[in-house]
Length: 444
Ligand code: SF4
Image 1 (cartoon, rainbow, N blue to C red):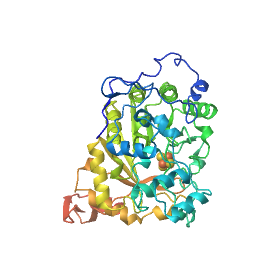
Image 2: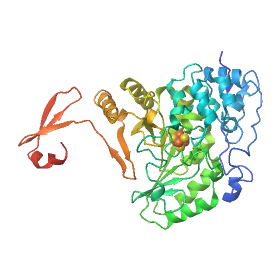
Image 3: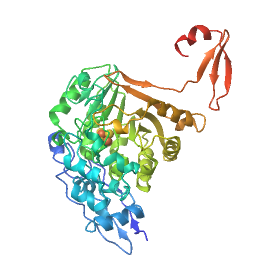
Image 4: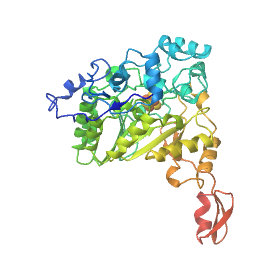
């Protein structure tokens, strides 16, 4: 039976606890993960287990599934520790020994973990590990986080930096490609590594740049001195692995720049570490509106009880939520899976935003699908479900061309006075458009 966990006290907002107000970034970095945190204290009261959240502790209620997993594989951990995102980060699975206690590893997986080479390191939160099928190496969730030998094959046209981000980097950690917005890579740290990561050249390699003062100051100075920048996307690595106080400091600095209108955060934390979405974190984020968030979802089974709570908490903080999904062979490359995913996202107040064709990152050929598969999926969604649930399918053009949207061929022709359109049922319709002949040249 599920443990009765009473959670009646919200975490203390950052800046209101003793000693944190007015700290310099250097001091805040001392609070940076993964090494400098101690487990929170818990207090048992009355007949139910009463968890008194420490500052920033989670109020995420665990599912029976993750509680059973904790008891089996982390029997020394209390429910409160499991629910503490710092405990989850400290106890990441990074080696074959621990992983093989949880999963029956195929010889191919075992060899890939041992070989390691230049591939992105193995790194999985205990929470996300609880979602993996112990026996099935082809389970979609498992394919996304457990290495296989195919990662060591380099196919033609693959590259370590397929989007040429390094080329558009005026100062370290800042990509300025589009005139009005920048990508600010605030950390190289992720709590769980995706095997197809576009930034595998930097993620998990240099944890010392988790919150590097000098890099951040140079990036902030660049934004201050570039008045065309009205929109900042914080990414990495994962910005939500930063401590509340550090995030608050950074968001405050960016918000103080008069020409910055919009701040966005790209993250997978609500999916792989939902315990991180605490009341305290939401309190920080809602102070810096307008703030939007793109969450990296890949499969409907990622929308667990815990993740649902995290999404609702963020949405209740007034943060518009979008999902970014990479189209992955053997994971989500069919209409049925994608339809389940987008429906579950909408039910959790997350708008499917982008469906990405997988970037040609080195060692990713086993994840890439033909482009026609993506178009089939969009065709299987458009008209068959609400438009809110249909993401924009894009290729992020190799070499730095930016995102290019792809649509199935809905414009099928034109005559003198009409444009001819195909609907979701395959039926053709005319729309009166005298200018169609001239204008359709570039669209058909
Ligand atoms: S969460 Fe994003 S940055 Fe981190 S490993 Fe996955 S794809 Fe890469």
